[in-house]
Length: 252
Image (cartoon, rainbow, N blue to C red; front, side, top):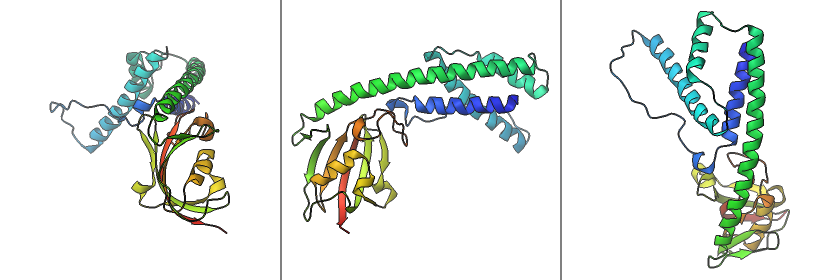
């Protein structure tokens, strides 16, 4: 029972800190830089494996503590280490019921802090998105539609106009407003094919401004993208930038 509750809280930590990660932290390395000491000698591979697992857990806990401090959640790392040691040696200083009660309270506190921080980040993302679009509007060739979509046509292309039921094939790169890339079909080495009406509203509208062979940059506000939803590393209320190449269009 205690193990399952602890496991649930660890998973909650992981969800929590990924969910509230800022743009600047999205691609930060998980592990900290290490200072290797040659003084420690391991007797066998089992000792090395145990040590490696301990370091991995320690790095995670250490980073979690730093982020918790910013949220008003402080846990003493030394008593945590003491608790791990006591559990391994089966000499607990608290009863099972006390441990369950404490962990349940901690879980509630984490969930509450998570909701507050996510709302804060969503609000900040909206503000930064508006500022970005204001600056984008000053770029030569930039257009803004009634829906709030902004775009720059790099190449109009040729052929028939795209319709809602058109089957189209595109190559694209998607980034956040700070330049962090969250998707790239070029890197995968394969374009994607879909029916226009099945994608986000920003694409449904924006791709109609070009034809086969055309290229366009779309700046999509949250209400035309994923809104408050967090999707594939995209924080809630994100303004999205897509650089799209329309490779083929088919009309059934």
